[in-house]
Image (cartoon, rainbow, N blue to C red; front, side, top):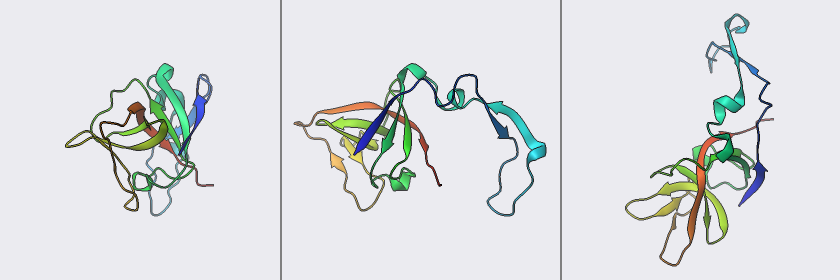
Length: 142
């Protein structure tokens, strides 16, 4: 199940930037990074390439966890990108919204990224509409 949280004008206002540290963070021993500040970035410009065709939505469920899309993740979806084989997409299948990996060959299917879920094969009687391509997943840890 997918809950739309609406179209957006921005994640942060166009004038707001967030400092970005130039130094890559180690997953091992911590390193002081204050001396390595890069020019601040605007998350709108960094994450959203086509604002007029972009929307956010919050997901519900576990079928995409192996693609790092978990319950309550927020997806950035671009409607202007033509979906390709193996893209992660938001689609409407017979009126139900889904987030899955798109398979175009050898047979059209919506594939989960969790071994506990089955692929959804598209048959002649199904109505499939791809709403957009997922470009970013935002996960919160606190």
